[in-house]
Length: 535
Image 1 (cartoon, rainbow, N blue to C red):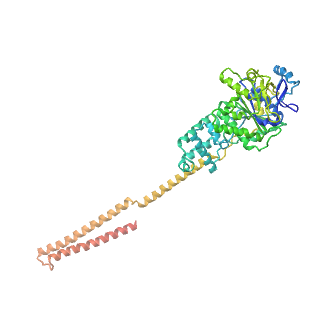
Image 2 (cartoon, rainbow, N blue to C red; image 1 turned 45 degrees about the vertical axis):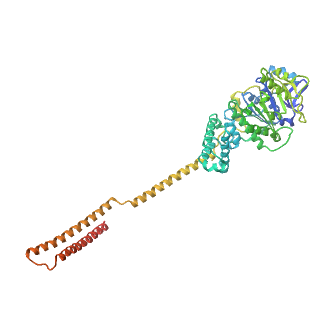
Image 3 (cartoon, one colour; image 1 turned 120 degrees about the horizontal axis):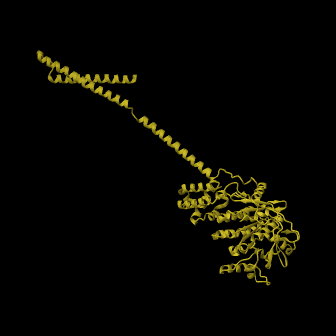
């Protein structure tokens, strides 16, 4: 509850109201307590106070209970009992302006981010990668950046991983070994994440952080994230909220300490953020939490025990509300002691015993004073909310979504020429060029073969010509020789004397045969050539 007299009034003790000092609200805070002790109502009361002061808030709704902040509350027996305790006579029940969001786009406007925005460090966490796989992932981001490849969604990342795997020998010399085993491990982890619904989270249009800073009717807008389904995927949930916090840190300008923060960020089930988290990432979270206050943002962790928060981060949480903890086991007792040790001691009661005996709605409260020092812890009762306690029905949620000023801004998934489209186009071009080159080689080879090949008819013609020539030669030689021999025989029979010797006669026979053969060969070749020219 916020008013000019009490400021950000959260709880009430015997000494009076306990309020968060406006200019100290960006020094962060903690709401802790066992299940069923009233943490959700405390969160709602805090968010209402900031809303009425004109400070927008972001909060994750684990069970749907926080959706009631969108509707005015009603008087109940519990509230009537508490009214005189708080000195309230006529509570002004009122709602808060609300925008519902949902990573999966089912119970609110989709909240997306791109692979590039998430970055290799957060992706390593969400995918559970080894050191070698993280190295390959960093190489992928470097190559994508150098080539101007946009990494919007999972298929872009998968296409880029395939690309660096195919060109591993080329890039390994420059960036180090790109093992196919590591690429395969990342691909399998990516498939698992995709099966969990992360394909709906990565993409365009990405969420505009400035939409979290909206104010309507002088009230800060409550951005409520439906997380009942998301919390079943702890790594996706915590990584998404850490990305959101990191984006706020990077985007918002430095403003220093203000009278009121620009935005308050409630991180429910905060233990999920630190489970199975590397030291490097915890250091990153600590850095963001420490520095983001200068951007005018307050971060409030909501969890069961202070031991869920790393010590270095816990020390930065100045505004604290501690609900009851149980101390049945040695481990529980240690957690209670840690919680007690984080408060400035009140001599009027034993802090350790008080934590174990608090009733539902009661808490130990310590807020920072005007100088930034923690106040003495007080046993107090948390105020009742002025908005509805409990979930709203689906029809009410739909009406609020449809009336929202960001309706239609994120609801339709957009596709642009990112890494997948660019790399697929390159591959198709390479395939087409290879096919064309293959066709050209085949065509050139066919022409060469055709030019070198002799037609079967030509060989037959050549063989026919040679047969005729040989035949003619033999015929001519035989005929000439026969004629000469016949004449010689005739002379012998008739008694005519030859004027030449036997040797001369033999020479004449050969000479005559050769002349006849030459004439025959010439005649047959000429006839063959003229015949071919005629054809």
